Length: 228
Image 1: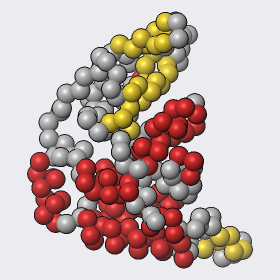
Image 2: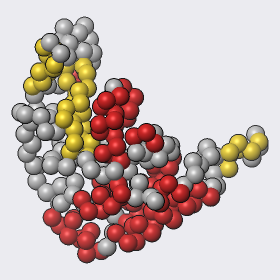
Image 3: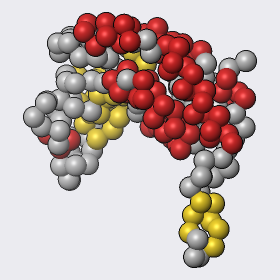
């Protein structure tokens, strides 16, 4: 059984006591159990020599990431139907804090393994959710977010990546830079692109498309030694 399955869904953090006392920010029993579980995981997996090698080589902490997925520490805010734990963002933050206590760089890799999946959760169709979210939660693939096209310019109105609807498909052309989680472990890319070149406002006419990482025509190139 995953350690995360032993966590009952915690009550809302911060109970209103009265107008004078304000909020009680004491962690509940379940929150304390989450912190202890993560602390034990960090103690067992974040070995100093392992972290040292990862930081020196810039390699992604794949072994730790997969272990975190096996134990249910990834995508915990996903509904249980998608292999998540059905918990909230506060519990996700508790886990991220605990992982970062072992090493901020490696901890960030774990915390950002599902980066951008909120768009899929909120706006994706059911087939896409069933296909990709369980794999994210289980540590099989990473979610790669691709909004930027330049290190020096992050204003979306200058985005040149475009997608044209053709029959039942989209033809996507363009390039992105500094794509978080890009590479062989990515399962899909969430790509910001212009889909209506005739939009009346420069900040309108954009869409985000989910593109499977194994699609023909996708190429990636490293940007030097960067952890993750």
